[in-house]
Image (cartoon, rainbow, N blue to C red; front, side, top):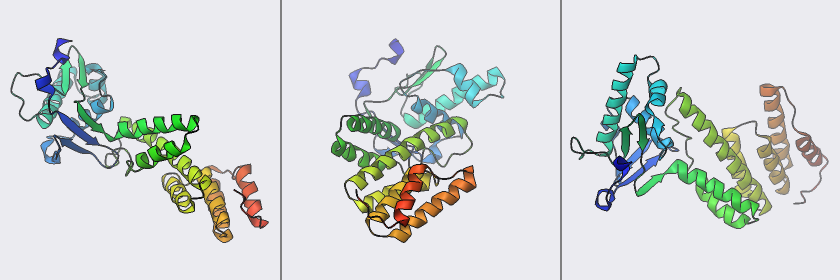
Length: 273
């Protein structure tokens, strides 16, 4: 569509940096955008939703149902227009009346966020690193995967938009990214154990449990690592914590693998890995 095409001079210098895994922060041309510029609550939420679907068109009908489900059609469309206008003013305060927005397209019953030439979005960086890491693991390139995932893990600070609660699509995306984070941590803890990097193995396993206190693989890693370090009491305590939490929350007992490891610790066997 002609409306989505821009000249080189129009795109030059356009840059946005968006953080969602450490609280929402928006940087335009390298400068932090003050939260006070957002005129209402719906405008930044609409912006974040479009960013989540960046470079993919979303129908206006979808947006109306998602953001203004209880409004009469005319009022809802007015609210959408106001929210889009507010986003444009935040992203392009210099935009003159009647000029097309570089970042937002809102015509022909669709709305779309267009990422600029210099675009940094922590969610994209995080998820792409995970996909790259998994591909490297499948290829047996564990050392390279480690380098990639150690850096990616540091992007995940507080979870996806942790300051915004009770918004369905945010909760769904938060769960998706949290599960990726946990899987990433589990691999890092396992790989650290394999490398005999005991401190890192303990560190990453504990970070897993900070996200999900019943994730059994993390307890197994802690038990094995403490056993390797000769800290049998600590290893036994991890099994007891695991057992009690699984029983309390799910009415379950630990997996056979965890129970076998526990018996090994009780019988005084040395860690062999």
